[in-house]
Amino acid sequence: MTTRAHTAPHTPAPPLTAPVPGAPAGMPGTAPVGVTPVVDLDTGGVIALQADGGHRGNISSTVETVRALAGGDVPLPLLLTLPTSAVIGGSAALAPLHEALRASGRRPREVILTVRGDFAQFERGSLLTGLDGLRAIGYLIAVGDLGGGHIPLDLLADAAPYLAVLSRDLVAQAARDPRRAAIGEGLAALARGTGAHVLAPGVHDEAQLAAVRGWGVRLAHGPLLTPGPSGRVRVPLPVVEPKAPGAVLGPRVQEFLLPAVTLPQEASAEAVVNAFGGEPSITSVILVDEYQRPTGSLDRSRFLLSIAGRFGHALHGRKPAGRLADPARTVPRTTPVIAAMQVAGRDTERVYDDLVVTDEVGRCMGVVRVADLIRQVAAMRH
Image (cartoon, rainbow, N blue to C red; front, side):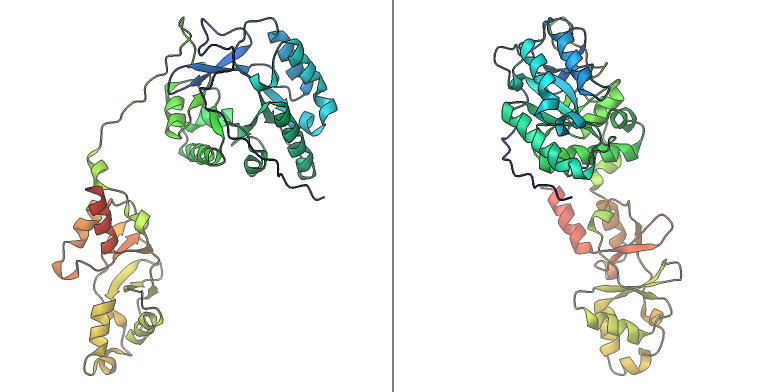
């Protein structure tokens, strides 16, 4: 079934610290029962409140949460969980929520609705139509469970949410799992790229906080971020790691990696001539063994001079190219730029020969041109 394209215009999200009319900038005292403060990590200010209920995956639990908070002193914007099924159900399914918010004195612009839960592909059009309708009324829209739920990432582009909420499990495990940390960093960058603010939920300790701050996340909530008597949250300052000696050595050579032209180590000089003749930009040919480990390097200028000399082709053309090869100058892929430059400078006659980058088991990954490293070093010094 073909779903409609999402064409509704998206109003840019207001600033994170923009106060709701009539609401204080901070929340005095402790948080009311049933809500969790959402903290701006840059200022320590509480800018919204996450309703703790509404996680049973139906509209009734969300309505119950609103009614439970109706009599309390909750002046800040409220984050509510809204199942995708309710949005897909249309205005009739959402009517109880609208009525509960009206009865509690809440205006739509004071509410952020976090959409969570699976949906079928054929329901996507109905979901986007429902989100358009909620946005037209005045609600702010959030997409939840990024990195943990079954929410397609391109929904961030179609739904144009004000807020993107990362998965609790992702935040909980990121501090001790580099792979999940990489996913979190990528999702945070993706969300910001679509114009959404990013919220990290359930932050329990400083390691988790340091991880999400490293992703560029500015909003968070959790047990670690509890307001004091002033209404401000003591946000632990990020620990500044002392610079390691290698920190000034520049990026790793793998960032400058170029594809290598490789031939078997038993290849003839004629095969190397053909390789160089096929592409003028090739600066070297690397000879490799059966496991792709470099055994020799043929610099374009020196090799072609040898072949072009008197009787050069007759002497070398059908012979193994390894006779004219130099030892390959290899550097592991994690080698910093400055260290790679030192390798290049050890042989004054081969300073500008390509460096061969190898992986953990010594296989050829590609080459790095010394000229690129020189440009990087010059940029580091300015």
